[in-house]
Image 1 (spheres, rainbow, N blue to C red):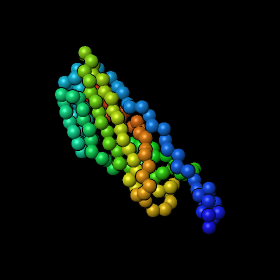
Image 2: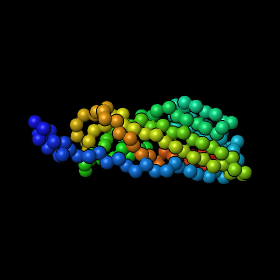
Image 3: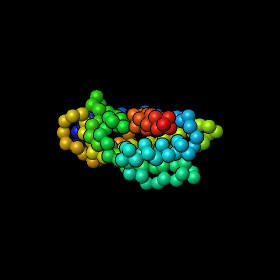
Image 4: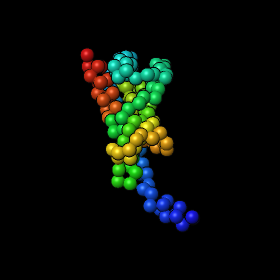
Length: 151
């Protein structure tokens, strides 16, 4: 019995997690007040549920948002097959005045909600895998803020 169990475990494909990138950082060429207003508008246009918003400390945090794996996050592979399905993502944006510019840092937290190996099979909730940001959300948000502060 033990030999059968060990042989099955030995043949299982390991989960390969993606490497987590560092926090996304950007500099906005406008003062804090203008950048903050643009940031709040950009988050509202994305229709993101906000958990916390604190202008005095420069923090905006979202609640969990369901997104398809591959859009905002990469959840790795099992063997040769990428994970597909849905992930829960949250973002925390930190804005800090620096003279005539504003520095932004965007942290992300991502994990699978319902996934499958490759494009076959049904979605499973367990096990939960950590995911890494693709950088797409962060880049789009910063572009929207930069565009808004121009006007």
